[in-house]
Length: 423
Image (cartoon, rainbow, N blue to C red):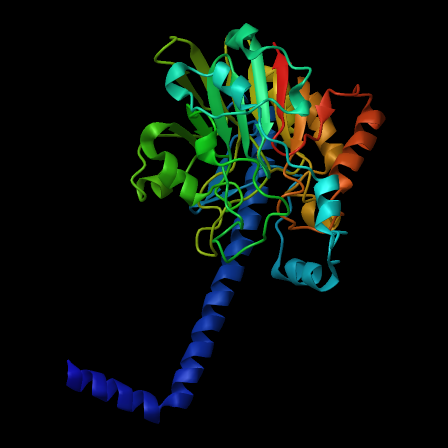
């Protein structure tokens, strides 16, 4: 073995130029292959979209199975919408070269505290609406001035009460009909590792262990800012994970097997073991993409989730560009008690519009899915786009006025504040 190693080392010393040529050739070959494959998939995608439209026009066949169903080509999921456009490497370079910096962030931390305050969640309320097995003691919660006008938690009926506590990005702790739901969990200071990725503008309002234990977790896609591997390890198999098609293996490699993998329009039933209440968890279409590294791009699907109970329903949109599927969701499952909709990471529009809605699009989705109330998330947490850090709530107010949405029905909540709704 040592002799072979010495011979290999000697060859490298005498063939450095050849090695360099081989490396350049290999990189060029791989690049050409990926560019060709991307072009082939894009061409096939257009053909299949055209074919689906023809099938929908054929009145002799049921088009339900073709309308906005997921699409996989050569092991990669693609968007089946005309409103989607794949980004090229040139698009990305152009954005990097032309993007603005700073996002208007103040250098004074006191100013940031004033403009983006962090509120303590109403733990007393959250515990009161949880099953006894899920309650975690937490002193002094809910006594602050932010909750002075809230009713006594002991007087509320979990079957007719919905709460939503935004914890940053798309992470929300939601309660409906006595069910505890956690969405797209991330509690890290940075998106990827403790030392890598965009950093939070504001501290997380609380830690996972401060909240009542969730019953289910909804994961819309596998991007780092929507799926925190630390949370996965912490919760493990104590909860039921609902994930899009193709993501179950990622959990299995980490020893997590209590996973329900759903395709668009597929449903799964969850039964509360203590109360016997049944809930329908429905995967809904979205326009986005997936991947945690350059090798797994679009190997798993992206999705929204609708949770329907006996008295209320919650729609977790996840990341998306605007597409016609939302009207279909509203027609099929509306009205919705509460919608959780992204309103940030949308500038510049020429680059972001296909993958991230802006507040104007969010209000249209609010109306499409027939939401009674909505909260705007995915803003003010990790700055990964060009808009001013306070633009999302301002643009949301403008869009609500434009489309005639009454004050208070669609809000950009404060970090950590528990909002209360009645079904």
